Length: 254
Image 1 (tube, helix red, strand yellow):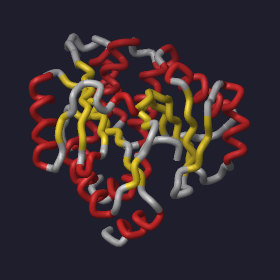
Image 2 (cartoon, one colour):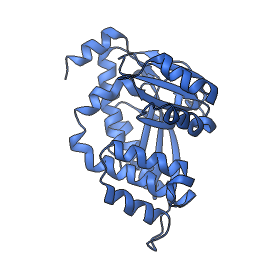
Image 3 (tube, rainbow, N blue to C red):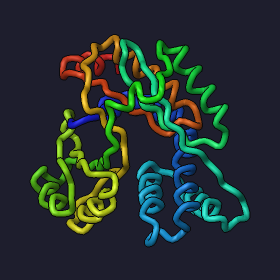
Image 4 (spheres, rainbow, N blue to C red):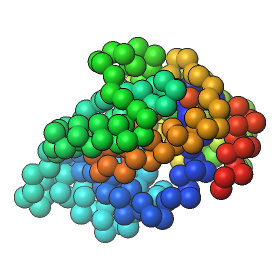
């Protein structure tokens, strides 16, 4: 893994997915609305909307909900959709760095909910720039490993401008790293090569990661759960890393 810790929480998140499904659906819908507002309702001419819809469908959001969100966002229903994108920098247990991405129609509510989640779970807000310096904005495209090889992915994406292809530590996927402006071109290259992908997004990837033990990992997971329980929090990025031994210990918790 070249930079971020999304893979490390995948199994953990599956355990709470059902209880949070409705909340997760609402977040996918919000992204669709914003993409439609910015670029219009035509998926063919709006790559951001096409990707938002792709992700929503991958996560079983009903088609009727998606269609209504597109119409609302594009202004076809007469409703006004206005969201602000806000990034908070924070520290979690044992100094783990966090970048907390919010999409909200109420800045004060978002700030209060983020602060409360941090305070109750051994975290604290950081000053502007205190954490961001260690993160770079990157395009990250996740490709399931089943049915394809690393060489297949490399052949498909290198000429399209991909920077790196890295297998995830659990071996279940490959992650293709690009510059943020190249995500759509590389995504299309995968599609043209007949290679399926799970997601194609821009993320905050840490330049340096820190290994944490199982006890700290449990605390970090609880904090991330609390943050993501807020409707306003879209993504949480972190710089923690887990060794194979720690992953095995955490797996025993499931």
